Amino acid sequence: MYVGIDVGTSMVKAAAFDATGRELAVASRPVELSLHGGVVEQDMEEVYGAVVAVLGEITGRVPEPVELAGLTGQGDGVWLVDGEGRPVRPAASWMDGRAHELVDRWLADGTFESVFRRTGSAMFPGCPGPLLAWLDRHEPKVLDAAKAALYCKDMVFLRLTGAGPATDVSDASMPFLDPRIRTYDDRVVELLGLAHRRALLAPVSDPVATAEARGEGLPSGTRVANGPYDLPACALGAGVTSPGDGLLIVGTCLASLVATTELDLTGEPAGLYISTDRPGHWLRAMPAMVGTAALDWVLSTTGVRHDEVDGLLAGTPPGSHGVRVLPYFAPSGERAPFVEPRLRAELTGVCLESTRGDLVRATCEGIGYAARHCLEAAGLTGSLAVCGGGTRSSAWMRLLADVLGRPLRVVEGEVGARGAVLAAAERYGVGLDARAWTKPTAVVEPDPDRAAFYTRGYAEHLDRLAQARDRART
Image (cartoon, one colour):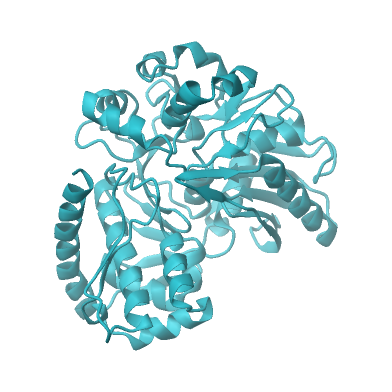
């Protein structure tokens, strides 16, 4: 069997597949996020323990030899470790907002734009550049004690295999990697005031690093490949590799990705270019901060259960009786298709007659408008695949197809883990049929009348967003 490991923000998963791509088993463990005052952190030992647990469960339930294992996980953040891969402090999550004042300063003085023009990375508070700069100012002794500033999957790879610190071109893409030569841009390190911390950046392994498991979770000697991180892994798992084709990941993060062979570092700095395992091929990424997390907050606040969502969506008309939601709920603001650290969510048109269905549908519509904004900015011209936890709601998928005005190739299951296996197989020279592994489970067509309604609604959304961005800057 082939094992894919996906170390997510709130859930760690492992999935087993046979050689045809059929999913044999999935194991998962939740992991905690600590949120307080804009600071979002995770316990690395808890995360690694969850990885070992799900791997042990998978190998116990499917008693077949493990041909190879592919690793993926959440991107960005800062995972500081010592020489043994042990944490020197809790991991700072990609959702962390403590460095927003640094980003504000860099937006004002031109540093932000200078970095984008060199690397194609529009920094946000939870990416490694601002976080490392904040730690250098406020916790320098922690950086002194660290051997490497890793990304999530890199920490897991180091612990599983005992290999030295390493990352890959996809994780390194934000914000230090020069996408043209696929190595760190030392000028960017200098611009962020981190030249004296340059040694903390893990070596970039291109192609992705490989090593053998030491026996925790996986049988000793199992071949393991490190990367790519979850966004490009999902693109591989959904079969999005041809220029112009796109992927929408409706998960905790609402991520829009479009495959491209063109590197355009002009225009408004936003999103990033993710380098892939093929030189000259990138994913133009617009990873918005909040996806299903926005809906989860509304469901929790209104007391709606997840199994009630489809019924509420079906029973509420397009437009949600005038209720509108700008779905920017993240404490660190928004990062795509623009960067606005102080932007916050807004609910309008609510009155005593508004129902739970109005609030839920308006939130889903708002997320759909945000997705359309991101996909347009990323340059979508071809087919669109969609994956993530949101695909479990058939009513939401129909709503999304209408809001986006295009068919959706729905790819269900553990798409990130699937992509991690395909990347590992390519690295090890194992022939797997990628077309069979990435076949969609359904295609959802938009309704023409509702699509026309939402085209008008999208224009109104952009107007409200522009006003909200102005308020956020004052």
